[in-house]
Length: 156
Image 1: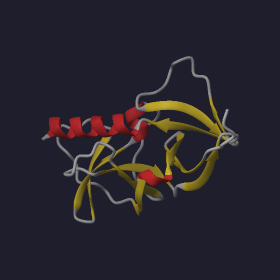
Image 2: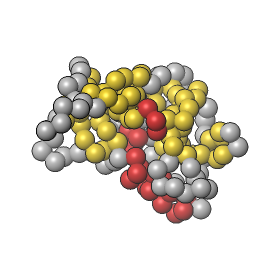
Image 3: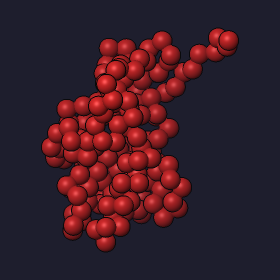
């Protein structure tokens, strides 16, 4: 049996009525919120597109997607630019609406515990966890990315 412990740099992100835990390496940048360009025929969780470094990025509301809360961007809102995991060179990023600045955290085996949900997890969530005293959800970034791309294709 190995005594090697893991240490991961993570980020706690506040969204409407929930907190998300993500690996720090998935975040490309944190931006101030600006109203996105709306997309016709898009689901309500796909808020539109934003401009970032020459890219047109889809902006999603995780809280709306997961059915947790209605979430609107506004004063104090931020946008995190996430590195897409799917390997599509034409869409290497997507963006998520957040409330306030992400907080850097250190994740270790002794500070992270999975919470039992009896299998009832919101859409787009891999697990509910407790990191020290903070409860959070671990989003399924690959599934979110696929749903964003599918919604973009359907709205086009």
